[in-house]
Image (tube, rainbow, N blue to C red; front, top):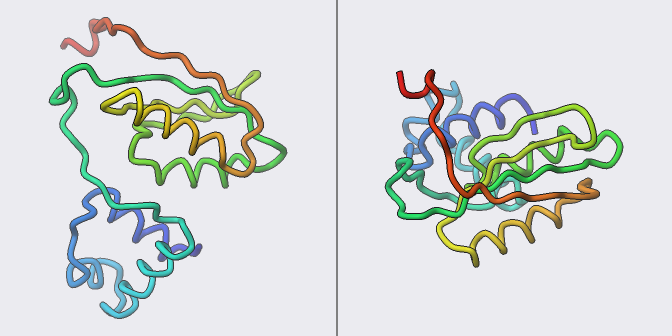
Length: 145
């Protein structure tokens, strides 16, 4: 992946419905180039699917969790890149200590959650994970303001 691929992915993350005719001038390349790049990113598995982002709180009782991830050797960047392709992953954080990456995950059902964890654990470079479900949340003063 080069800089153009990263810029394309960034634009698609913001709105996966953006037409190729809009992406091309934003990237300074032809529509054929954008289409070929998207096709290649899908074919190689970098793009695992296209999805929608639902407004927070619009789903009743979502399954939310924090997954701590241990990475083998120098695979952190590659693992983070793969995790960014998961629509269920709401945020990623690098961390110190026992765990290398912290992923915030949200799904609509336990079945989807189980499938997501299974897919995450299959990523090359992940050696171990530990997951904790978030049962309730308390607003802090800075969030409420």
